[in-house]
Length: 158
Image (cartoon, rainbow, N blue to C red; front, top):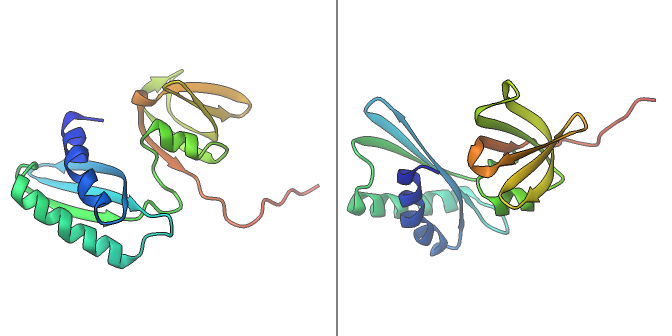
């Protein structure tokens, strides 16, 4: 995680937690003079629109006072959803056994994108099985990872 994102996480995590939610992750994207700060919040019983609005108002107030983002920015607060992004080793452990898509910061064996089953975690490495081949990716080498949602039953034709 970049230094600015780390500072934002440090600043905003206690705010989100004080409102009964977990700060699942955050992303800061800059495009010219404009930035977008996206927060993903979660709760054991699920996130509703009211949670997003309450957290957005509170986080907005803190950002206005602390002013950690230069220039104009848009704040977005949402649930991680079914295709939730994964950021931490603990989150990768929690979703072991699920299908994931992973994009690396730099290519490995000539490619940056991998899609397979999240087998688990070994130390600081994320283990992904793609076509019966096991890959170990250091968590810091992962640019983006998401759970691939499953819809309905898997049907095998025989």
